[in-house]
Length: 366
Image 1 (spheres, rainbow, N blue to C red):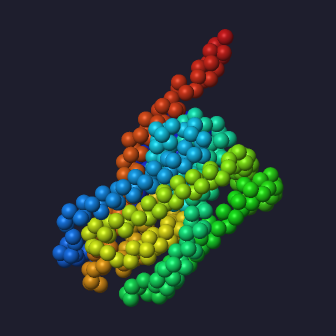
Image 2: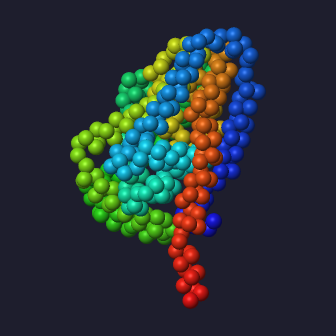
């Protein structure tokens, strides 16, 4: 199935790589830190079922918020089923590509193939990215002020100070990149879209950047289209889009809170929420697909000291929590994607989707 669309580079077989990486890292962590005594302090009452249900409910709200936002951005041109399918395909793509790449570029194809024009699809995906970045831009300093820098980055006593400083540096670099991206995008969307495109094209004419000139031209066009799209909406559009974004991302970060509450009881839930947000900022620069391996490891290091158990059981408790956390938040999208992606590709890229090829052959035979 030869085609230029970036979807052609996505293969369901790629799902095996993040699984192998994750299993390797988790296996090493279990070998290094596992202590069977941790099961003696875990709560296995009916309360566990309640909080695990809450964890899955948060995942439902995460996707539901995304679906609502797609419906808002498309002026309800996308049905509930189409919006759901796009989100599942988008999450699957993000799960099998590096965190720094994600599924945003391919999401334009997903939206377009569900009945939206290419220009509006680009605008929808760009606005989605814009709202996501806004969430981090505002929530990071708010949570930093709420919990304090020392609590956010100073980990347990067994962690070296230099390592904690390294985590803080990664988070600040990630936040800085997001802030710069959002500032440039805001200038293009709200002030001078054509001026931004002109400036980007000038910059990317430099010899060492020229290979990306064509891509930047497309991005500039997307910004212009997105800017036109925004002018058509009023205050209610912004309120609904921001609320849907807040619902999605906040629900995502509350999953680990529910899992820890299920097995280990109460701890500092606000600080745990804040550290998860910082973790997602860190994952911006991680090269593994879906952050596989890194996510499990950094969770045990960055959030393990917030699990209310004795110090000798903290590593084991953190490893178990990290495994359950990824089972709830990551692996379902691999499974769903492997099921629906091939069917979606066959439905939208089959020969019947390209009748022009048959016409071309008939004309050739005349």
